[in-house]
Amino acid sequence: MNIALIGYGKMGHEIEKIAKERGHNIVAIIDINNTDEFDSPAFKSADVAIEFSTPAGALDNYKRCFAANVPVVAGTTGWLEHMDEVKKACEENDRTFFYASNYSLGVNIFFVLNKTLARIMNDYPDYNVNIEEIHHIHKLDAPSGTAITLAEGIIGNIDRKDRWNPETEEKNTDLAIHSIREGEVPGIHEIVYESEADIISIKHDAKNRKGLALGAVIAAEFVKGKKGFLGMNDLLKF
Image (cartoon, rainbow, N blue to C red; front, side, top):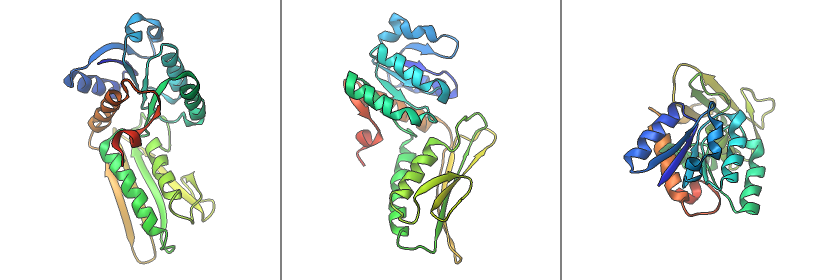
């Protein structure tokens, strides 16, 4: 399969390595200094583009992929206010777009555990819940997309919480997300339920970027030949 990479930082390099190990060809690499490559025959020959760039440039990258009729596997977070525009392009123009807030298999198992625990804790109002996420200092968005997905999983299953809020609870129905940026931490997410009597917590701690990169390549393999707006639920079916 021919793969184009959009964004060539640490994630881009890890994706390139895993894609080649799985027998794929990297036909184009686009970073901030060579965006004219979107118009190149090499880019247009790609079966799929895997995009890990920056929130500010993500939407324009997707539009340029759509213009070249190249399916997208999107790994950038922090741009979700434009999601309806992307979904509309998929529906009206027969484009292909795969989005996940996190491509790690372990994190997606963690998403399921989070929802299951939230359904249980809905019956125990003495426990308050919050989220803490830690990432490296280079991550531009806060809270992380993964933390927001976790928050949505809690809000959808706990009646006493109706919105997430960065850092603080302005009211009792808020779910606080505490974001820390330090060192080169790949990603730690912890859900904490606390009462006067005890604490219950679940945590996912990424050891490196390999899980994310492998998941993105598997998603790219999955989207080949498919149309529409897709996600990890379509791929993993749990």
